[in-house]
Amino acid sequence: MASTSTTRLALFKPVPGSSEPFRASDFNANMDKIDAEAVAVDTRLDVIEGQNLNTRVTTLEGQNLNSRITTLEGQNLNTRLTSVEGVNTTQNNRLTALETAIDGGTP
Image 1: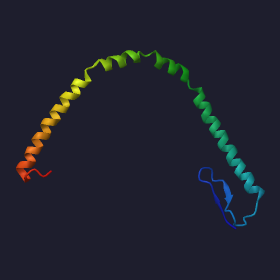
Image 2: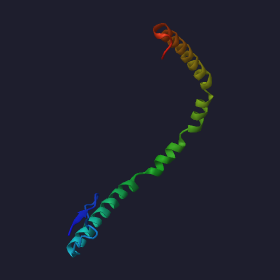
Image 3: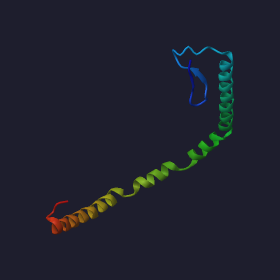
């Protein structure tokens, strides 16, 4: 006869094939734990439902996000990226020259 318990609620459960007897007290204790968890979940749900999420979403929608995205898209990011890549190429060339001077070009 052997038993174990579940991780989250510590519910009693017999090990299959162990001939653990059925006890009404174990069953009742499991049901009490499940009921307590259901009440706790319901309380957490009440807190979430109490939040004024609709107003918060409406406030977010009221922000001029489309205009802000358009402003960002209007930035000449491609040119700025090309400039950064040009600096990177220069640095790579200098690093290769330095490696060549030190050990014949082996990275």
